[in-house]
Image 1 (tube, rainbow, N blue to C red):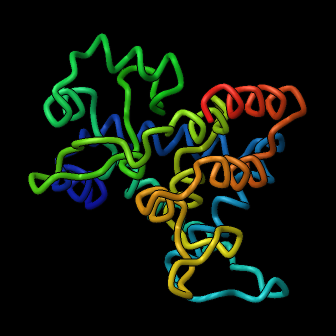
Image 2: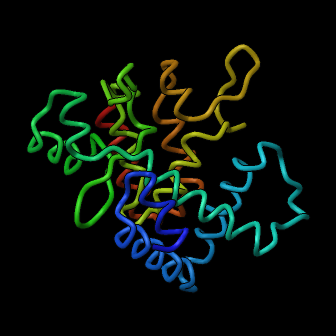
Length: 213
């Protein structure tokens, strides 16, 4: 067993499956059609790793980008909840949780098994999800394209944003803003700004905001 496989196993993850996912992610990020979103993702991850603003005139090196890419994949793999986690924490049956995903009340990704990003939940003392961060979370979920990179969405939802109203003079992340009772439409607009929505998607989100407002 290599050092990488051992490190992955120590996190309680399947080494072959995780390495396969990493390989697929590197291949996806190498496609020209995903370059802009990939670089946005890495820039946001770099901001999160460095914990300080970067000048737009200074670009991370390739080593920087590879470092934060590995960091992002590790965070997403460890922090996301499984379907059984959401079942146990929120006391909903699996069929109802899948219905939440289908109806855009909850966001999940993954082909073989659904993974639920942590940012959309209030977390209990036992570390399991106990509720949504907003009673109108569907307005936020509607702004996330099916093909969205989970790491990019996580970065957007958990890093502080100057585009949201401040509370007591402090910038908030979209997650903090929603937990404080902020309007989900403002977070939806922020996601659309960065996730590159087309006109059809924008029109769909606008109709959903009106429906769920």
